[in-house]
Amino acid sequence: MRKAAAAIVALLCAAACATGASPVGARPQPAQSTPSLPAQGAFDRFYGSYRTEAGDILVVTRLGWFADLADSTYRSLYSGTGSSRFAFGPGFRTPAPIAASLEFGDGRLTVRRAGRATTARRLALEQTDVSIPADGATLAGSITEPAGPGPHPAIVIVHGSEPGQRYYYDFWVGLYTSLGLTVLTYDKRGQGASSGRYPGEYPSEDSLTVYADDASAALGFLSGWPGVDSKRVGFHGGSQGGWTVPLAMMRHGKAAFAILVSAPAVTVGQQVTWSDFSSGGARLPSQSVEQMDAGVRADHSGYDPAPALAALSAPALWLLGRNDRTVPTDLCVERLNALRKRNIRIQLVDSGHGLLLNRSGLTADDDKAPGLAPGVISSISDWIRAAVG
Image (tube, rainbow, N blue to C red; front, side, top):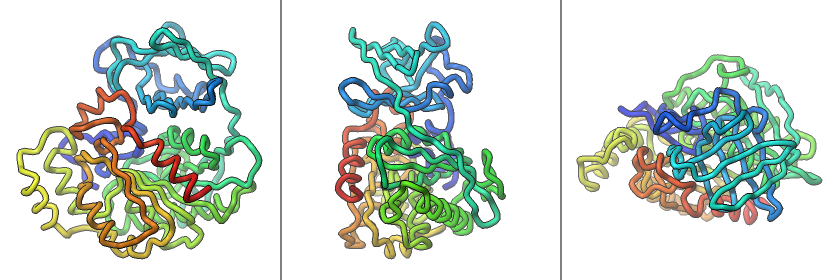
């Protein structure tokens, strides 16, 4: 999707539909000078999943995000005292006052907050770098396998609009491996270690076709991976990936399921029109809801996902923010319901485009969010257990 007047922050969707910054794709800027952001690469040696004595999973990403899957905390990490100590504040991009401190050492992570210390041990997840043959490119990827005997269900993480690399999706790797799935992430063609020509960020039908072909190649590769149940391999698509995944599923009959987050079910023109009313969540619209709805419905330009959605037969979870300023949630729900497909489950949460707890949908309020909107993790977890097993 086109870039709005202001950059869009799309937490956890791995990319905004427009070409704005993503919290999984770019380090945040601190709200004040101290505490400071760590240097690039500071989290490479700490990246991974950690399990507490109570069995809760904590995830640390290479881009400096901390997530507690038990209570939906999601925060940016800032430098502490020493190279293995960090801290986070009360909100996603709010570094002060310090709400918790983190200390890494000997395969452990100790989190101190609210006068209580929690220690978690790093999980020994097996990760293998792979090369995936695609049309006119070789995609560089990583396969992360959960602990325990297989065969495991598996999932391919499909990019949004950003020129993405596999490490943008570390959070999703942590979540899905905690649910027993093997996860494949890959660098977009022409980005990172992948070869080929980068088609660009605008979702033309040609570029979406290229990305769908790449996603299909990735799913085919993962289906043949040892220890993977080839009958239970599916897709995760965030934001613009919501256009890519249904196209990829039309190309690959082996796709068993799909999870779409903050994903449009409308045309490209309709999404852009909606986003432009708020400059991608940078400001509150001056138009009424009725005026915005009329403007969106009047635009039928750009790629239309209707044929791909009509062909979608595998179980699919569609997770949308009620206050999304980038994707017109109400119209997406209307279009999905009009399909009358029992295989599609729609779940709404109190978030903007980024799935953080945000009742205004403005990106500035994402900065203050303490974590994910209630229901994000539980909706995905419950649906995976019921639909995938």
